Length: 460
Image 1 (tube, rainbow, N blue to C red):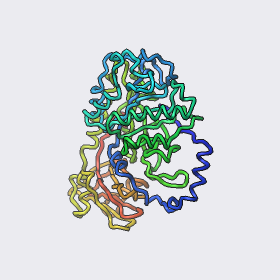
Image 2 (cartoon, helix red, strand yellow):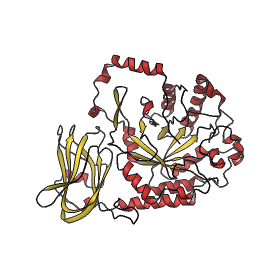
Image 3 (cartoon, rainbow, N blue to C red):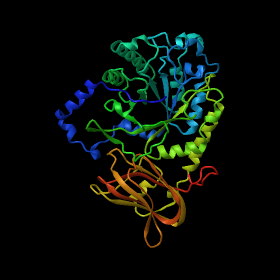
Image 4 (cartoon, rainbow, N blue to C red):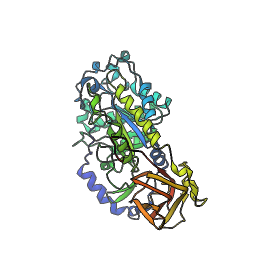
């Protein structure tokens, strides 16, 4: 995928900066005032998705196509998106984004805009529609569906003419946005676009005409047009305190993070004799804890092979990953607690649709869990209710040692979900100590786990 930032013309940037002083409503913004849209809240609850790369590159053993591949090379022998979706569902993922057109310009649906598509391939006699088949299969397996449509196009001759290419791209986008049902996410990938000026306002206007609730993924360079932001690397990890609200050009927006990484190390497309590159279970579990466990979305890259199937090794690893996640986070010790108050019990019930709220305008609060007998545990999972904004700015996880509270973990941001990992402790009283919040904190879940380390993963 090799995501890169889009460039913005100096004139456009100058105008944007020049206009800021004339927009007084922006100067009144502060971080605690910014709240998510309903569709952003729903998207963050999905937590884990996959992005699928499958095109002419699959048949040519390459990552970056230059737009010269003959469409006749695209001819999967056993295409079966149900096989993909079953493995994806079993992994625990909740949504699928299909790369409908990569940078080489080859389209996986029978577009009316170019012959450079599956219409010109031998697969199904040129009558097939990969996008349609994948969309139907995803929904059959209870998964949300979205698309990636590369702005960079190395095949289309009109790319040299910004205005002409804008019309071409808008027409492609209109087909995808109007013919394949609700789209949960639309990816804007800026790889290779240096020096090309796109009409981004028109792109978003076109998308919103047909898909008003679709969230747009983009690098922060497209801050004004995105609803989701890129984490900044392809490691699938969030290495910083994760605040959903970010500042760019002097104003603020709610932009939750999506962290992408391929299942096969450094490979977004399938390559032969490459099974050794499949990430290990321990690597995937660590990535999950550093992504979903840091309040972000995990986007795992998958690549069908020349048969049109996910390789057996990938299917096995996805199923293993989902099973391990269910085992790790399927035994919440907080469900055996003795409530310290009826009010706090709603944050300890295993139901993220309920939440405990500290008193309005409070800046410090605690949520305590008491057990009838001491328990041993080594991680906690906390979910903040974000509808009113991200309020918690500093917290600690404390245990009572018989005479005083001892801190076993501390950080700043909680956000959608925070997994704190620490050395095993034994205690009968545990508390979430919210040291600083901009207003009364609200907690959807406070869960407690004792995770046994695997032989190769150590304390994780």
